Length: 315
Image 1 (cartoon, one colour):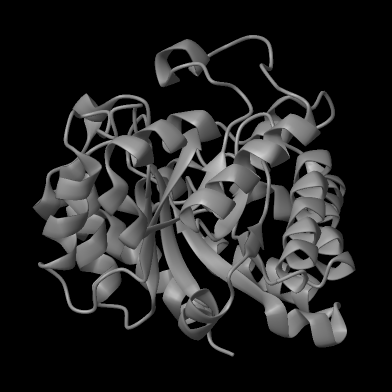
Image 2 (cartoon, one colour):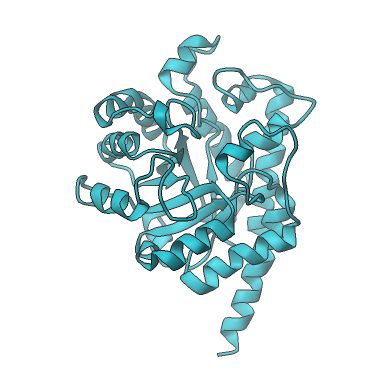
């Protein structure tokens, strides 16, 4: 089954929890100052550690037989940043996809339920919309990385932690030209506005009407589930196009979280219950974690999906 068919077919799709934040807080491995965790695959020790993290998430999906999304560790591997590193001569985006694809293939029959997204991020600080590119500049800037990921063989493209409409439009334009399905994922506030102040529903309507094909769906990430719930309650029309969340375990604002020295995390069971509420009340189907999460949070989320199946069998 192709990714776009799977997103429409399945009612519950598990995705990974935190990857880069777990490594950032590890004492054993250091992230590259320019491309973050994208460089880890070139060191045997850090590659093994990265594989362990992905397998923790995939093992949970396999255990509960849930469709699973994993994302290439390429959020910062854009062309400009690659030039600043010692990896400019390597095809970092392709190599990271091949790293994940090799892991996926090791899961046998279950691998057919695993979908790999080619991940990119905004050029600047995701918490600072003032650094966002214009639509035109964003289309040009992100095209190289998106084409590279598409050519590598990812199942779909995704841009995460987007704070501003202008750069999102340029990314959507570049993604639409690759021929692959794609998703845009935003940081929003409790009023459902992006960090640049634009209402998310306005962004969705503008992008949907501007590009062919339009996004498969939209997501939010790097926010607490209760923030998303309030945003939906105030703007119910969002659920027509926003189908997923990778949630933080902290309800603090982006400004409070940015550069925080200590991890603000809630218990896995509480986190899973909050995400389950989004699924049961609003039909949000792509569910996973962002800052503060690890395999324990994703395990509890998978257990909640089993509860959903048992509840459905009663009726």
